[in-house]
Length: 208
Ligand code: Z5A
Image (cartoon, rainbow, N blue to C red; front, side):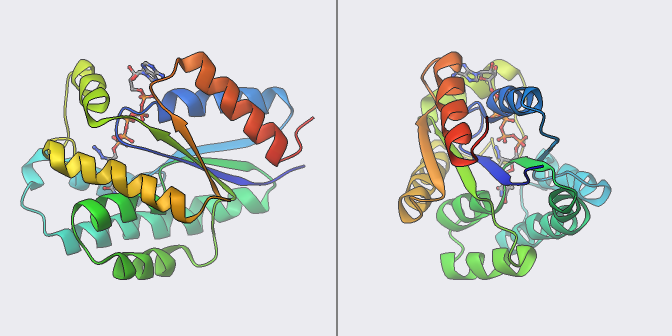
């Protein structure tokens, strides 16, 4: 049995959930066991903290409080779900992980990137994804897709310049780690993106 860890990153509405569902289905057809998860969330405590993080009423939250809440969710997630799943030979696919913290709390919110990385490291130890798929969409495409969904959360309600910093932050993070990342234009068709992801995952993890 193969066990590996893949994360999906990107601005909101970039198509992560859509593509994660396709990838899960594809790998299951290949006989692999999948643990599909997301951040913030993935555990009982994580889901409770998720509500606090995304609640519009908490608009005044201090950025330091915010990062510690995301990291608290991550500690629970890594220790109680991700590590046990990897140990039992499952493929872990997570919708967001520590790159989101660097993009949102670091590049966009303005916390010093080195401190964000220290916090990330403290939360995850040596549990790193082997592959991170960044779905890149412009701020306008992202806003359009989120608007269609009909509701917006605390983070989505930030202005355009915040979301531009998030997007550019992700691109910079990917540029710094070209071996771990693949960057895909998230405005291509759903089918085209699905094929690129299938090919890359098949090649990287020797799926027959
Ligand atoms: N956050 C943070 O600040 N710090 C952290 O450390 C972490 C997270 C871990 C979580 O939001 C928020 O927390 C997020 C970052 C912050 N901020 N925001 N805002 P979430 O989990 O509720 O949601 P999300 O991850 O931001 O995105 P999403 O709404 O789940 O979208 P998605 O999964 O990327 O996209 P989707 O649901 O697959 O697709 C959205 C729509 O677009 C849907 O109608 C699709 O049919 C359509 N779609 C998808 N692909 C395409 C293509 N290729 N073409 C056309 N239409 C498409």
